[in-house]
Image 1 (tube, rainbow, N blue to C red):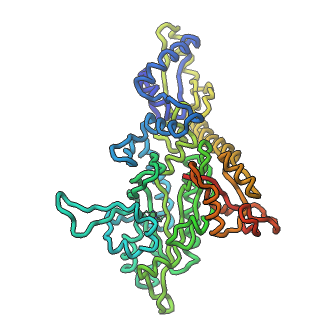
Image 2 (cartoon, rainbow, N blue to C red; image 1 turned 90 degrees about the vertical axis):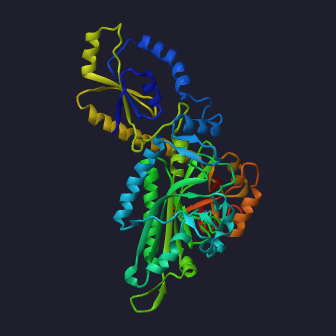
Image 3 (tube, rainbow, N blue to C red; image 1 turned 180 degrees about the vertical axis):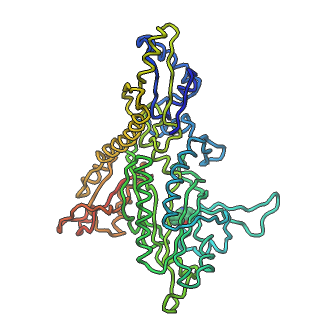
Length: 486
Ligand code: 87F
């Protein structure tokens, strides 16, 4: 637990209040006086530190978000659109999640590696069917100094084409399997739709896991094991509730067999957001990249592959879900700084009285709900640890209550359209036909963006036999979450 002692340095004290989960003040001062004091100082400090926000979360969510991430000193805008500087507050959150995830995948015997940033055009083309839709987002290096390169070089938007030629080389027999590699790196996707810090940026940090197995059974099991780790990153660290489920045929990674994801929801914008994905690639890439092996019967076989990733987008989701009108609210488990200790010896107060009180209790103020508590110095550390756990849990509980309050069950088009208009997270019975999803997209097109399926939750409510699809009226096959999304 990181804790800072602010020896009455108002800039430090105020500046860190946005991030610390708890502010503890030792000693009691004259209440009326101290209130007047803080009020007067607040404006001054805001001006000095630019920590104050000019808009409220409910009034202008987009502007609020920009101000929170910048004034909270998490990011700085950069002179290339869609690129952001990740400041130390951000990186320490990233590192906490990284430490957890990295340790967990090591337990699964997944090894870290690092492949080059650059992709040769030849190898990129081998995946051309799947890259087709993505091609406009690939960034290229065409020059060195003043001279054009003989062959332009792509910058990785993801590393399938970089890694799989070597999987083909390294995998010979069944004893080479499974091959389970992960890399922590940056990727570049030259997005054209409006960039948003963490949520949609042209360069971002992620981990990408790429694994190869002898059997589909092993691959299927890993997909879910990784997805559970992603759920834990969101729910246990970032205190953000997510839904685990499967993507529709239209929304899955086109190169794979099926895609699972964790989906979050941002109540203020009424949009769903894909939190992380875990794909079973089947044997599609094995075919393209000739990743073959001799199986235990001496026969030639093709590997089964998975790939999975989560990115710095996680941090944006957390800021959007927990932040308030005062700025950032970080769950204690990922906060670089949990507590600020402020000694309060006022000159005009009775010094002995203060010292007596200081020796006995501290006043603690929580960042999440501003609740105040006087805690005895005896057993303070234990109490504060409990308080941190309580803040972590109540951030999650509050976020879940808010998310759940946005869920609407829609059984027909009328109910669906109404709920969409109210920015809800819609759970609807669906026939699971691709054409019907395309039709839903077409019918909901507008300035706000079309609605799409988010996922079919693994946790399926009962579906009575005669239930009809909300959009086509055909027999429904499953419950699926729908909404606008990031
Ligand atoms: C952008 C440009 C080029 C996404 C792209 O999800 C290619 C792509 O293949 C591309 N944007 N994708 C899909 C990425 C799939 C997969 N890669 C490994 C993952 C997990 C990590």
